[in-house]
Length: 316
Image (cartoon, rainbow, N blue to C red; front, top):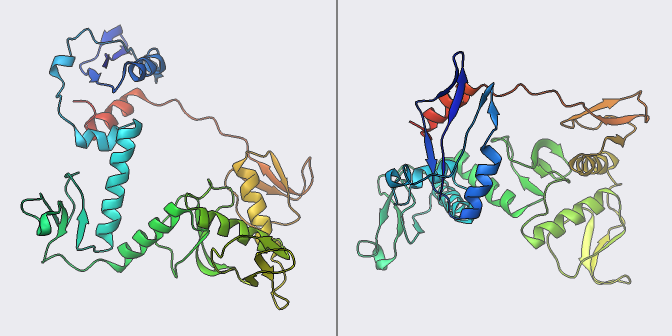
């Protein structure tokens, strides 16, 4: 394992802080990496010192699994799996699932009791919704459905109203498919292959493609029919399809270019607010979106950092 010992610089010079932290790692390599990253790093004007523990603090660390701290500060595959399990639990609970199979307790879940095999119906361990639990909130159900769809990478999720921010999505009241959440064209590739294919299809449709090769039906696309034809199996543009939406295609190009870090993206008109970019009618490259200059960030204040760590329970 690895340990860390913190020091700070005050008016009287280098002095030992009252707070010390020791961390147990899953591997020697992880401990060495943390040591390399943290030793000598400054918070405000004070240097942080990190070193391998000589055994003084390891004896004081609880050897049992610390689920609360894992939830807050965990890293690595084990922590990622733990966090993913918690997310699935909360989504199922938000939808009001009567039971959620889980082989071991992962923490408390509002309106649910964790039952071990000997006490659970049919001997299946998991979380069981209490009989006196209130009905699930429609808003929470909407958020859970939205989260599941976004996890799969759905290019569009119907939603009549804004229910909260979702990473890689914009809620639009008047998009090409109606009100809902639209996935950024520059977002990571969808985890669900069908959703990834549907995203490509929608982008091709916005560009006005006459045909998009696709071996199987992955979803409906406005203005297109899935069928066999002279160019093979795929999506064919219908004769009565509405004209291509140039602004929608421009949005997709802008999102992809910004995700790639482009310094400039030519665009004849302002079609959207693009985070980190400014639309200029006059510029060195012409009309379009220019990457904004990054503002210098203030150095983190050490006292604020320590106060936050104590509040979170990372240090005492």
